[in-house]
Image (cartoon, rainbow, N blue to C red; front, side, top):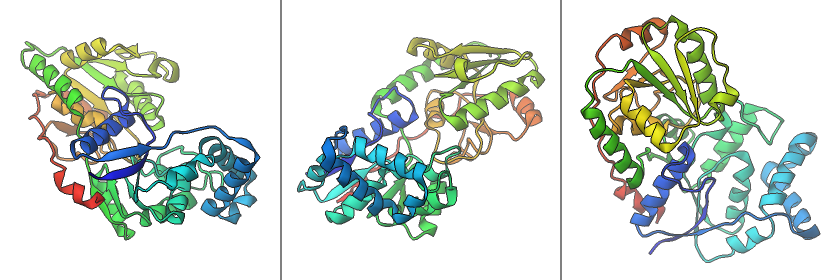
Length: 358
């Protein structure tokens, strides 16, 4: 049985946010393949020796140039000293030969430094290319995206293999000589069953409801930006109600003064189920960002047509049931047509990828 060291950034939750659902997918797949994991528990700072060890780790990971950026130095030291004390050395001294890591955000790059020191192979399942996510905070240079991207690429080049959630990121990393493979999102079994039940209920709907659902977490910067943009131009859309649901939508979004927009806010699972059953389509708009939207595949499984701009549709272009638009006129044109229940996406077999982590 394969055994791994594992550092994850989200708890696996079949009904959590997108990152938690991706973590649940990975956990379920590894369980199915008989892969045992030893997780690193985060702990707080423990004494003067841990402070010294943390500072040395900061300098080894980010280089002496970080001393020219006091804010960056403090941010890196505070994060590492709080989360990665000398307990981490015991973690890396374990007999497992491979470290599986989900996050390549700069704060986690200390793990690559220690993996090299303790001669561990690294396998990465990044949820995004973190340095390219809009409004990301950087350890190096107080906001220098190019330096942060260069750093992220450097550490992924040291990986045995990198599994990407989108085809676009797989292609990009291969250009940098990284051993990258496509590992798309597919919901864990519990989520899949729930979505297929919604599909069955949608099959018996009688007539269109003229309701368009826009769901997502407004705590996520790109998602909130896209939601606000749609709400602002909804006044130009005739005959349809836009229903906005998700964490932070009431607190972080401004409802327009005109337009048929209903703010639902953070709703219960049962309420979300009802919205998914009764909507005519799921609408998504995003600015350029990385990763892939888990809710697109989930909506298609639930039998919900998707209307999305090209940024949101990344990794799903030309998928049955996804309709792309670039402006208000194209959106109105899509809404005027019959939006049929899309074909059910096929389940994905990842068995052949197991050999890559052995």
